[in-house]
Image (cartoon, rainbow, N blue to C red; front, side, top):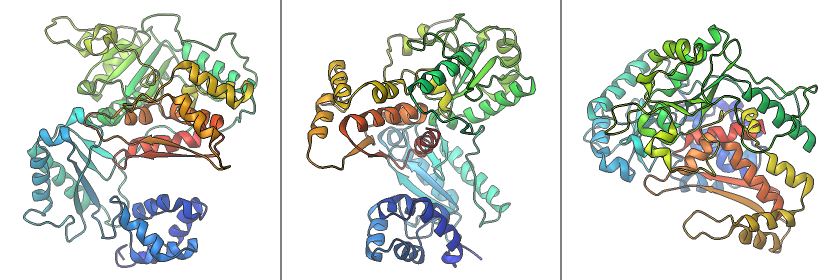
Length: 491
């Protein structure tokens, strides 16, 4: 029995979706997003059921469903292939990639988006934020494929066709099997002292690591095989008992005297690691997408470029266990015969001074403990424990913080105007949308350091007197949305 023929066979699932969103009409968009994820489209019967459950006119639900281009009321294929048509992809030949995919899927010579057997839907979308890999294709909002040729695009469809023939058409397709889990919440911080103790505890844990292996796990690197590199590293480290674990916050751990400032290691280069002394992190964007997959070693910010799973045994043996640097994995700057050891020796990084992205690429983007280790939430903790909203506004004004959208408007003035505005109900809206070619710094921040965004939102909310906040993100940034949701659950 197919989902298309009997859309209301999943009533229990619909009830669960509505319940998860508290049955509120204000959560209609995320409810519809989950319904579409369940059915692969929005059946009319399901929309009517949602309207009835929320006690609102069906016209309201149908209106929202037809307003947003990401929603569809037509059945979609099991594999939704989105061909990026942003500026970078367009000039790199996305037209030809789209043609090759449609031909391979059996849609050549037609305007139909979906095959009659509901196996494939082919769509053209705006920028997916991986311009360095243009032309880019995304499958089912999870897997990203970059630098595609027409031949490779055809092979992708053929591989999905073969995969589909061996799988039950009604079973879900799971692409994004992430390794690692969210640490179980066994300690709830009640006050500022608890926060400082947590920062000190996790900072000490990271500083005890002899080497930290930071695998870039953002969109571009994943598209080039970073997930497989990370999996191989984790498996090998675990097999030898080398991987470090931060653990949970213990009541018996005292706060180190100094938890402020930069996190500094006792050594300036990776050291031979023994049992439980090698850190491994799903890091955010390191910035140099052309060298993906990137692996950065700390201390020293040693850069291994274009790492493959087959490089892992040598990395474990020589770098982790012996503290050696593998010169063949280092990057060669244009015109230079000798490889470049670290970021400071690379033209791309040499003159960069990161502020908003200071810890992006240095911490595990899916682990709040690492954010805390680098001083995360300390500004919010200080504000809530020691400052009034007016004092926070004064600090923001004194810092000279400005908007970065082009106008350079002073953040403190904006926050103060909102605080003084009449009305008891106020909101914080974080605009994470970006449409300029090559401008995907919002995606990088959300994917690589989501807690920093959440902390900034909370500080703003405290300063202006808001009780609710919204993050507006592009539908083409599924990994960013996933990590922000996970960070919210951790926090």
